Length: 288
Ligand code: PAF
Image 1 (spheres, protein in one colour):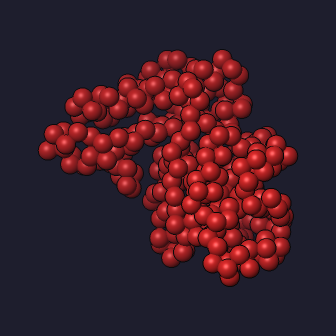
Image 2 (tube, rainbow, N blue to C red):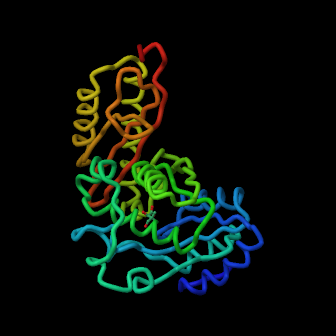
């Protein structure tokens, strides 16, 4: 496995592989890898000839009061895990390599509308920071396939829209969320939680499952059901941000005859922001 820190060397390494018609799979990460990330690498290993994993803690997607300084950085351990999975390249640029000039004067890629709801309300720079860096990384790596976790569903849809709107020639593959035994979705930020709080954090997924069951059973007053879940979470020590039932394809408010739905949630537990979702099909008889 090669560890490459600059763009020119990465492109020199990839050029002959592309000329030999090898397919390039790309897994962008911010490091501190857990089983969720590793499942993306495994998916890439299965579907592409060469797997490139980037590790870059992207400052542009953190708000002023967020955890950029304390975000867990575990480069050596990450490389050890990637080596075990036989990733081909780790691309680990520093800030100057990705943002050589003042970030504030930099070109930004912004997905209007989709990025301005749900997480985009409390984190106004978040998605713009993500789509900007992912667009840069796509242009640097020029992968055939790129893999993203479905836990970050709004991010996944923003990236799908970006490649579609900007004609970026890469197939975006969503990979199912990997969970702890408790049901808690894996996330680097779970490391901020004590063992006891991690156990409590699993309540978020349980509440989503309850809400899903209510809709499946014919519950129609979505706002009321969402409020009940918020109340339940807030009563058990969470500070809920949003619980929202949406259409899977574009996160719009569902119409009566939409049957592929998703419930998305974000909540703080202590100072840790947790997000999760559940996708489901509403029974056909409830759509008429
Ligand atoms: O999902 C992440 O880890 C990040 O948002 C990403 C896609 C690597 C961009 O920095």
